[in-house]
Image (cartoon, rainbow, N blue to C red; front, top):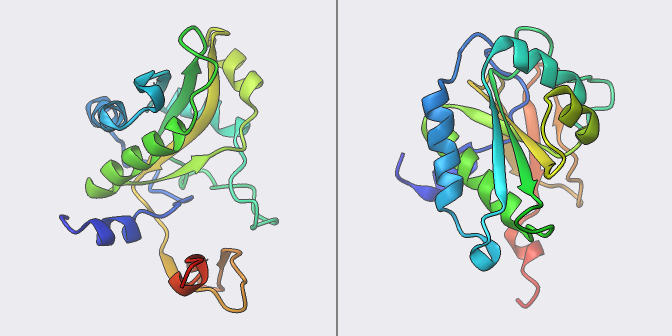
Length: 191
């Protein structure tokens, strides 16, 4: 896929996956390498990653994550639809306590790379960080920022124009995930 706009449109927050479709450690390292090569504030490069693509470690990580704030009656993907890999993004406080905006740049690079390879993911910011850190025996100087869940997408996500400013994503009766986007004319201030 070479068209950047199409790649960005296909890069959605997927929350249900074909759990048995594994992602190799080599591919996960390739995705982290895209993040490594991306811009970094002050070029400090404070981000580190914990890679999980084993069923056991994935099972350990899953309970510490919250999945979809607007879908109040949904506790996250059920067994069989969970991610086959996680990249836990951490800040190395030995380098700096401030990672500025690096986490967003890195996560977007990872997700665009995953999308290009036929995978999808979701950036999860609602994480029980300290509990997860203890469960995985991550040293205290590495502070969990967010978790990028990855896998082969099992759901259909449709972008649509927001109506009357309503931007809450939702699932319809066929379990299609709809993501309203504000029109370009609404987000450009100086027309």
